[in-house]
Length: 321
Ligand code: ADP
Ligand code: MG
Image 1 (tube, protein in one colour):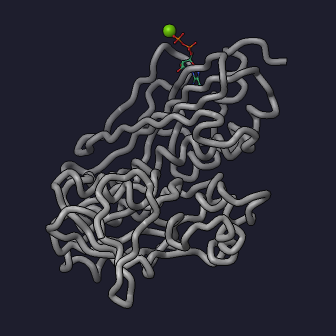
Image 2 (cartoon, rainbow, N blue to C red; image 1 turned 90 degrees about the horizontal axis):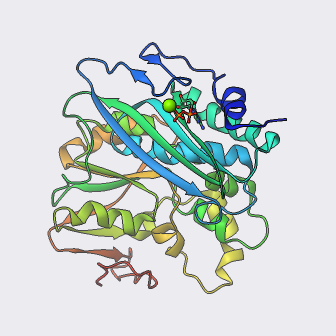
């Protein structure tokens, strides 16, 4: 029986697969002591998942552990960083040992795949919430930024869009492969690292392509055109789509603004585009060219026949036809 936060920390979080040389003191002291390698810049991010807000009640504990880390790794990927350490703040309604066991499994399976060590955290009592802080490295001056796109740059995304958002919206149980995209997103770290020195700007897609592309554009007051029939959709998405379409939605609505994709959206100057397509083509996620950065502000969604596609009202600011 787990009595105190100290039991929980000791039992679930001190025994972990990955031990790094650059962790001088990890879990157990008042704070961690870390050695940042010379000739590296430290990249740091943090994200919180709250039950009922960021993941549905009843989400499997292993998925919560995975996703809490994955959403942070996705931010590191968008910076072109190589992950190193994580801290974990866990707020629990009760110390449920089965839940904690599964949570730790999901968390550490992903952490060890990326050579990350958990170096500390906090454990408190309250409604279920998980905050992770992730750390990573980039060579000096090589972090990928949101600002940096120029008119004429090509716009790409990794993987496929809309799978997780469709899983969340499907009545009953979504197909297993769509659910997996929702519960176990795969951060595109390899892609981020390959894009260093090639991409002019990058962001990860957490709130939907249109919203996140807009963040990338607004830093310089630029615009974009998207060829929406080029958006990469999975076979699982196309197969499950008819079940959702009955609710009156249009086909591109979910891939454009559904969210929870955790793919990268990035821009590439024309002179680097062949190299990017070659490099990312060697990864399982691949990449797809979906549009062009333009001088004129706003995002224009174009159809192959020359017409324009009007996204459903989504509350985002910069739509013009
Ligand atoms: P303090 O009271 O000094 O803040 P705590 O009792 O909160 O210390 O934590 C003791 C040690 O356990 C610290 O090294 C802290 O980083 C670590 N720790 C606490 N909670 C977690 C957690 N959920 N995951 C990983 N490490 C944790
Ligand atoms: Mg202390």
